[in-house]
Image 1 (cartoon, one colour):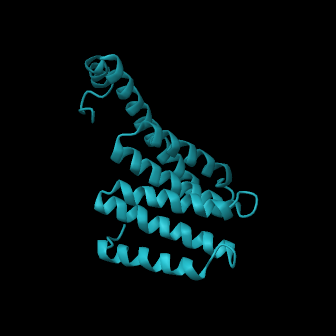
Image 2: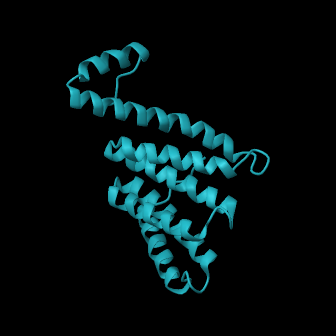
Length: 174
């Protein structure tokens, strides 16, 4: 059960993490800086979702990518995988928000990378969640890409008919 965090509390968290980054600099404490960047990304991603804000989601992407500068796979493989997973979630949210097949494809790649280190024997529950998430994001990316292509070629109605044939009880979100 996920608890609901108020938008105001999320904004305060973002401010606190940004203040912490003034002390936990990359030069002084690289791994603490990366962890704080990752946590800032989590707060920004959640805030972007709650505020329906692409700008906040893009800020989250910047924080995750910054964290990956120190959360290198060779140095801290599980932290690298966790940050890749968080990056994938933010990319998927932004891709859905902006109807961007490119962002959704980037999300699929981030999830795929995260799975390289999050093997069942090392982290038993997490790969299951990642493996469950990956097909949904892949399907959304494929559908978005197909819709973009159909729009360019003037075949949206044909795509809609194909989609309805595969999913007779649902209406396409395009």
